[in-house]
Image 1: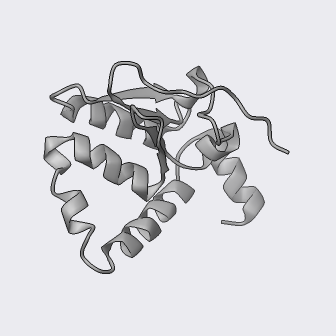
Image 2 (image 1 turned 45 degrees about the vertical axis):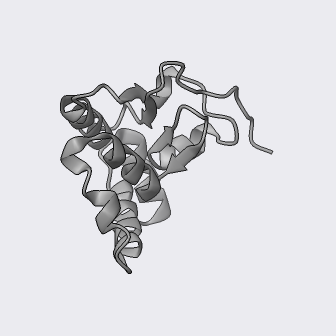
Length: 132
């Protein structure tokens, strides 16, 4: 049974974005979010600096992007991207486009493809071990 940790919820009403701080791709994405968050609706935190939210493990967080909304709801992967988009004016159109049939399917596949090709030491080692 995987070890569970205490919940991670923002007390300031912002969307908590948990990203891999040891991954170049993830860190660049977090910096992009911060630059485009005009209304301070998100808070990007490296997963290495916090406990995993309740119901997740460190391995879950390392596998894909996670967000936690102020009510404690957790989204991961493409769903997390859509939650972030709802907070950023520059991406406000994305959740609407995602309602078009097939777009969520494509978004999920694209997200998984990008996540598999991340640029951190552990990511590369995992890809070599799995044959990706």
